[in-house]
View 1 (cartoon, rainbow, N blue to C red):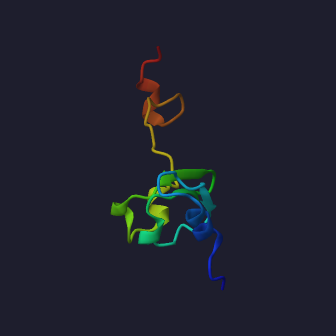
View 2 (view 1 turned 135 degrees about the vertical axis):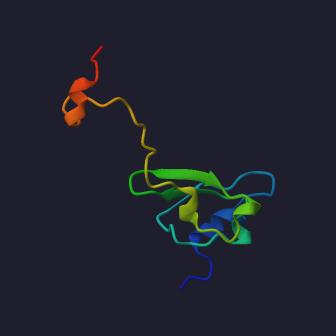
Length: 92
């Protein structure tokens, strides 16, 4: 194992006033620790990298909790052939 993984190196290079470089990762099961506060992290959700900034309230949570893997379902009107009762729905 490495002593200083790349994530820590990027954080150490920056001054306290500026934000560190974004860190891209696939590790959704990694627990957020206090050293990560203020970091910009891109977590892969299976399709894209979703980014977030680590805040003190996030300590102890998993990174995957802040990268949603599904899209919210938007229910619309039933279309033609959706079900047996859809033939009674007036088409506009």
